[in-house]
Image (cartoon, rainbow, N blue to C red):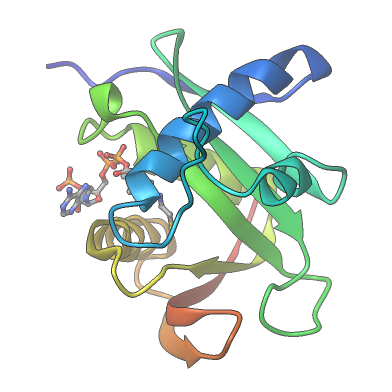
Length: 168
Ligand SMILES: CC(C)(COP(=O)(O)OP(=O)(O)OC[C@H]1O[C@@H](n2cnc3c(N)ncnc32)[C@H](O)[C@@H]1OP(=O)(O)O)[C@@H](O)C(=O)NCCC(=O)NCCS
């Protein structure tokens, strides 16, 4: 299968309903290894948390593969773990199942890293072993091995943390 053409699109106000629907798919995937509430009306997740994720503190991108909707990414300026506003935090990252394992995630991540040159932090929860393998591989290739993989065990985050610096 040919490698798809992956493009990043900064989210506009018109994209908000689309993003909320994609977020439902993302949280459904996460419910496999984290506690995600399901309301009686079939809505996944904490509504306040979801609204905050699409709020002004974050930068959101839609990801397209060969022109088709394939996922989204949410970035935050500032570390989630330390008081350092210079760090780019990769807050959420999602590729829909139909496009997985075709290099879409890796290509989208590379474009994000180049777009925001500087220090980065990528956090993964312990149980998400696929994401850990994905980030280790993608960051290794992008930085040519010039990154650190550590662990944090705090109330805010338990699991691996990748730190590295990118150039435009
Ligand atoms: C993790 C995720 C983003 C990967 O996206 P993807 O487009 O399928 O990844 P890619 O095809 O670009 O994979 C790049 C590399 O990551 C690794 N990788 C990807 N999926 C993997 C899997 N299921 N098992 C092991 N390694 C995997 C491989 O090394 C792969 O390189 P290769 O294809 O040359 O072997 C996707 O599975 C996803 O959205 N998962 C649910 C949400 C999530 O966990 N997000 C991350 C939160 S930190």
